[in-house]
Image (cartoon, rainbow, N blue to C red; front, side):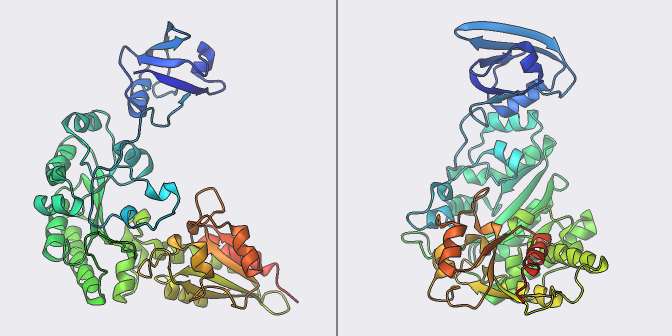
Length: 447
C-alpha cells in the first residue's frame, strides 16, 4: 500500500534525504505500512530502510537515527487510511436522533480504535476482528477507550443491534492478557441496562482491573426526534438515585480490594437525583472528564482557585465606581442552579452576572447541557434571551464548533450579538475562563 506524502518538516531527516511532497511512501524496513499506527511503530526503530516512489521510479534510503526520532513526514490522510465507521444500530444512538438539517459533522459515526488511542474517543470493538485485535496488542495501543454499555452478551447484541457485540468480555480479556489498558463506559437506559444488568456490568469490568482503569456510567441522551426508533425515556429522580446507590456500593468494594473507586457516575445523575456533586478527591484525577464525570466539580475548583488568587493579589477590591455591568450567562437547564450557586459564593465586584438556563428546543427539553444549545434556542421566544436586561452575554465555547465562532445551527457569534444588541463574550472552558471573562467585563463597568 502506497501513501502520498503531503509535507516534509523543515530540518527533518526526510528533508535531508531529499524526500519531497508528492512522493509516495512504499515501505519501511521491507514492511507494508497499513496506517499511521504502523508508520509510527516502524519509524521508532534505529536502523531504517525507506522505499519511496517518485514519478514511477522507486528509490531506497538506508540510514540510522535515534530511537523514536521522527522522520518528519505528513500524509494526505491523517490516519494514512480511511476511518472505520460504526457498524452498530444502538437503541440509544444520539446521531440517529438528530433533527434534519444539522451540519454533517453531527452525523459522524466513527468507531476506530486508532482514533481512540490518539484522541480518547470511545469505540465498541464490534468492527475489530481477531487479526486487528492482535495488531492492537502488537502495537501496544494503550490506553483505549471502550464503550461496553453492558457485559451480558445477549443484551449487548440487542442494545447495539449487532450480532458481533456479544464478544465484548472475550475481547477485553484478550486485551488484558496482551498488556493493554483501557477506560470503559456504560451509557445506561432505564429499564434496559440499569438495575441488575448494571450490577453485572460493573462486577465484570471491575474484575478486569488493573487493565480496566475506570468505568463511567452515563445516562442516555433522548431527543424529540426519535420517530420510528426504539421507545426510550429519561431517568426519573428515584431511578437516578438507584443508579448512584449502585455505584456508591461498588466504589466502596473497589476501594477495599483494588485501591480505586473505579466506577464514576456522570454529573447528570447527581443533578437528576438532586444530590450534591462529590468532592474533588472522589474523581481520582478526572480520568473520565470528557464523559461529563466531574466536570462541575472541576469547574468550581478552578473558579475558586482563580478567584482566591486574584483576591490574594489585591486585584478585586471593591470594584470600579459606578453601577455594576450587568451580564447574562447562558447555560443549559441541568447546570443552571449549580452555576448560579457557584457565582453567588464568589461574586466579582463590579460585575453582576445572572445565570439564565435556556431550554433546548432544537433537540428537545430533556437535552439539558450547554454544549448542545443552538442559536435558535438562545433566541427562542420561550425561555430565550430576548428582552432580558443585560450589557453583555456570556456563552461557553462548548456551544461553538471547535476553532470557529459558529453555533450548532450555524448561527455565528456576531449574528447572536446583532440579534440581542449586546456584545457576546465567549468564555473559555473551565473555571479560570469563567473568572477571566468577568474580569474582562469588570474593565467595562459603566459610570
